Image (tube, rainbow, N blue to C red; front, side, top):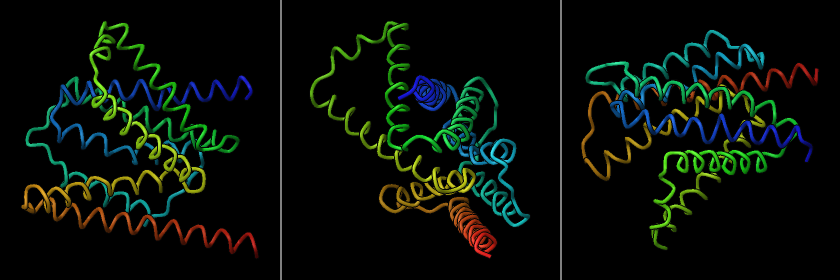
Amino acid sequence: MTPKKWGQLVLIGMIGGGIPFLLFFKGLSLSTAAGGQLINKTMFIWVGLLAFMFLKEKFSKWQLFALAILVIGNYFLATPKSWIFGQGELLVLIATLFWSAETIITKIVLKNMPSILLAWGRMFFGSLIMLGYLAVTNKISLYESLNLNQMFWIILPSLLLFAYVWFWFSSLKYASATLVTSILVIASPITTLLSSIFITHKFQLNQIIALILIAIGTILIITLSKNKIEQRNLCTTG
């Protein structure tokens, strides 16, 4: 490991792990759940803009149309009852921009680094930053009162998060940044669908519209990206 690679691990831990998570959860505590969710789900838009500028990713009219469908679908899924852009919403937006920048930097760093190592760096150095924040704010003592059961429910989600980050980075290594972040949008409607089936037992009209739009947008993005790759391969072999 060279000093440069250690620096890259620390950087990803800062802009993808510690700092944005602190901003995001603080922002959620100050904003409405719908408003915070809507802002966070705009990440694929910022990633698309940054990928266009720094990764030279190009978009056809149909791809832009598919992205627009995802935007509309997200709005229907998390429509705030009253839209107020306050301090909480600003913190969530800043966190989203941090994660968007991380996606672009990760895409570049993955050319010379294994995805599992980069995922470890994000989790490890991100955790150190958050522990440092707890120490500075005199909240580190909260960990002293944790019992074994509570520790288990901290460790298990951490392992699941590590697996998620590893798979996420592995996807970024082989697919475009815009495609990967666009596919993530479908997580919200899946959660909403499961909640409607097993918890609330109710389906609202805006949720149904959102599910349909996001499904259409995601399928379009995947299909168009696949066609683009096939055309590129044909040009290369030809």
